Amino acid sequence: MKLLQIICVMLLFSVLTQAQEFAPIGATWYHTNIESFTFFGYEGYVKTESVKDTIIQGHLCKKLTKTRYGSNGSENSIGDEYFYTSGDTVFNLSDNDTFYILYNWGAQVGDTWTTRTFDFFAQGGVETTIQVDNIGTTVISGETLRTLTVHTIDSLSINPLSGSYMGFGEPNARLTEKLGGSLYLFPQDYRLWDAEIKTGLRCYSDSTIRFNANISSTCDELLTSVQNIPDADLIHLSPNPFSSEIQLNIPASTTTEGLSFHLYNNLGQLVLEKTIKGTGSRTINVPNTIPQGVYYGVIYIDNQVQTTSLIKQ
Image 1 (cartoon, rainbow, N blue to C red):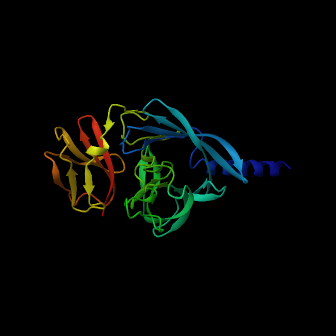
Image 2 (image 1 turned 90 degrees about the vertical axis):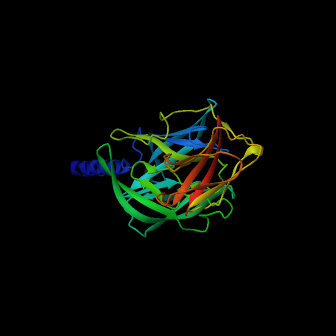
Image 3 (image 1 turned 135 degrees about the vertical axis):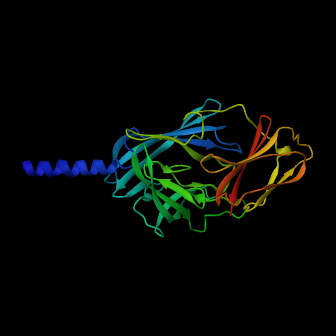
């Protein structure tokens, strides 16, 4: 009997240790949250925290709470998430009460897995397929973590009108063990830019790791001083996708004093900046050194801002 008790304790310890590989109790993520053509920080952030263990469908799961903080000072719960870990694989409970693979840290180049995300147009969950393009490692707080570069390969991956992606948000999405996706923990519908989406992991912390992507001055920064450019003065950017140049069509009514164009990557890093003078058609040359992927073209005019999701091919 005593031997049986020891074995049971050892098995329980093994399960608990395995479950701690992702979302240990106290783990906290901060992701920038934007909506309606605003840019990093102007609409606030989402804080996700692992708060307790629970049993679902026979699996020892972590419960994660999600809270959205708006630039107007609002604070709203946006639901809970449930994960369990089996070996190298993290499973997430979806809207249809089925566990889908969220991350497979043991995947090799060419491997695929099926996950589930919310389709804005269908207003419900849809399955989407993730394929691994590259594998590697990174060191954070002295810990070596596995990384995956992935893309979405099913028919929902690209919307021909917006050119944006479902899945983890770009053709070369980066996933990092423990931290999750560089844009958000979960795959999203990026095909409609003025829908509410998460555009970057600001910070992550647990008992052993501290990570700050420097997207904002603090993990919980709220910026309220920047206003959207009025619809009548919106500047059209083309083509999208682009390769070597971006055209700006600036309305004659636009005051171009203090107008500048900034191109940011999905980590919020500035990769290109140009001062723009005059109205009409203006061309911005894009260096070949800027890799393919999803970017955010941001136009500033004094204290106003316009943001457009762009894809470099």
